[in-house]
Amino acid sequence: MKYKCITGGPISENCYLLIDEKTNQAAVVDPGFLNDALLNEIKKYTVQRILLTHGHFDHIWEADRLHEMLGVPVCAYETEAAFAADDKQNGSLLMMYESVTCKVHEAFKDGETFQIGEVPVTVLHTPGHTAGGVSYITPDAVFTGDTLMGYSVGRCDLPTGNSAELRESLKKLAALSGNPDICGGHGPVTTLEDEKRRNPYL
Image (cartoon, rainbow, N blue to C red; front, side, top):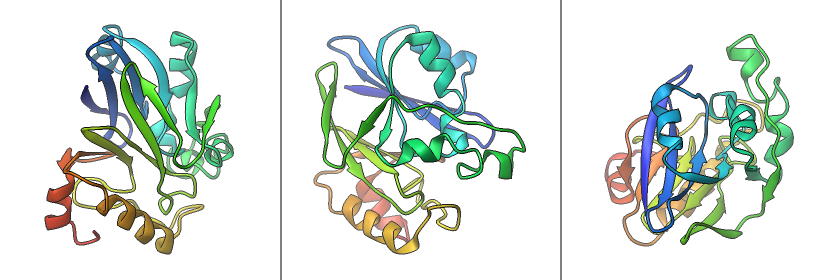
């Protein structure tokens, strides 16, 4: 497997393509924007799913449009669908003064597994930044959204955020085996060992 990180959007969010090189199948993680660089990459692969780590506006902004373009489901944790569809909860009215929502077609449970091509993916519920936040665990990388990102963590003072839950989620991530890449929602891609050494929250 491999992944590609493309940064853009209203607050420089990271969108990822998770790619199975054997089958040329892929998933798009957190499509908060659709710029030329991202669209050109998407055209190279057969996209199977659109994966949301959480429902904040900057991570879902183009999910509906991408669903219409590709005809594949938008997927999120089971309780996050309502959050993503609520422009007051998801921060779009608060921060952008316009309504941004998306529809979730496939709801995941904690511990659920699926495949992108031949790449196994496990859903890990990591609440705290939002109540329905998840991380997607693959053999070489973990897509953590705003739970853990670039030697920092996401804020927990927005709707459904919870500092105690965030601490527990960080413990779950710190306990993962190996040294996977940490693909956060903002900032640089790091590794788990790097985060343990340099992130004061972990």
